Figure (cartoon, rainbow, N blue to C red):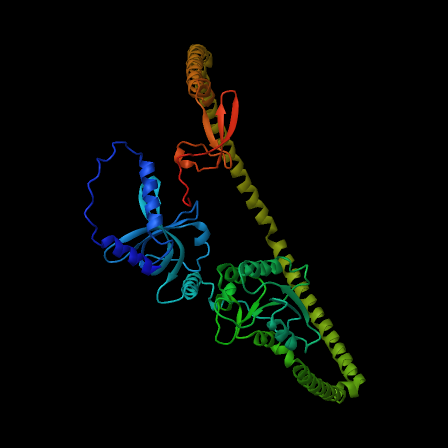
Length: 522
């Protein structure tokens, strides 16, 4: 098709014979739409249907609402606008970026509303490396930056798992390879969760299987480990395990996951996100059952070790029992009892003697104190009486003085109280209170009147600008039916959308049909 384009270019560059004199052109004008339609027909008939264009990407952007992709392809001397519709853009395995050199396949067309030609792209391929390889590198860098491959995030595998779930295709050879290893251990409970391992939509189904096993862990008997496996194949065959949804489902799994995908040289995004990466499905089964293979020998070894420990403990206990039996206390038990009886008698006699000695000492001290008290008691009583009389006289004098001072203070307070009787202050306070009550009542009535006037004014203004009043004046309001959004511009609508027009007395539903919009595929 490139040769056809250059042939067409050469034809355009060939010198043309001098035009024959023609009649003066018609003065009949044509519309812009008709001119654009003629240009479109010339391009469609004069150019091949498809091109392969090589160039550097710039201004790459994706419309979030429609999903269409817009960008520019350029070289050192020229550039061309490109558009890739959502149906084709959804099949891209990589994310183009500004500055990337691509090979774009598509057709040339004219976009009438803006009067420019552009390349309608149907396929994109990166130059210098495959699209899948580039997509793999982009996805790996993105998830690695988020920490999905970090070793500290990965969960340890159970030592002796008994409930194992296999996620693979029932027809895959990987299933038979894993069963050859797992069937050697009858105690294992193997559960198969069938899932496609290649093709469109396989990645989403694998991610859904991982999430379902985690959510239904109690229903399936408590799975302890998951094996995600597939046999070897090309990068295209293994692409389902490089999708982002599978990696995120593996990272979010509460159950440890062992991946065994492809051959030893194959490494997928799922291998990097899994808790353990086995190079083949057979190796994945061997990793899960590694401890089971040595379980019998370990049990036997620990049994012998336990027997030796029990024999050693038994012999030690027997020796200790024999030593206890040879002790003096067990050979002559009554001898020790007799010694304790004699010691008890000696302690009893010593306690009686000490008690008698203490009683004699206390009796002597009491008699001596009684004699001294009898000799000194009369003089002590006389001195106490004299001191008591002195205290009584002093107390009488002090009480008399305080009583006289209290009478004087009471007389002065009575005089002041009579001069400052509260009746006068109460009358003045009552008058001030009545005046304040009158002013307060007048102010409250004025405030209520002002608020009533303000409220009436605001109500009239609100009624004048309310949507219902606007509708009664003949205006309408239009909303989009699917989300109820109010439409303020025709640019917010697309052909075929449902709209609802609101009148003062009801609403009408209609469909947008723009007769001026040209179809891109005519």
